[in-house]
Image (cartoon, helix red, strand yellow):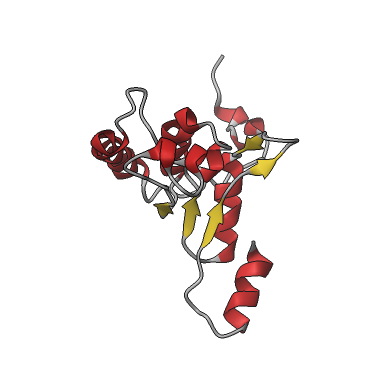
Length: 145
């Protein structure tokens, strides 16, 4: 994504954002890997999650995918919502619909949950992992057994 974002900037558009939409593994098997959301940060622009599109048409997974993306710390979600998802003219399988077929009525509840997750996780920085063996940091001379 770094190269793609830079190419857009070089073409004169400084308003760049990147969106995770999943990786295809065979026909109709779209997988969202949360690691990609972290790696996309290297593009130095807002990172979005593809929400419904990322579900590979399995709309029941949209809330799970959105929760994961928000917990990782995305800057936004791209969600397709239609008042009649089963009859949406475009991307009907990726439109969010609740178990009770009340998408718009349940959207507010989902968004409130996502905002609560974001409040807890937003601003977290990636851990800088120290791979130095732990024993080298111990003061062995002054340890008591």
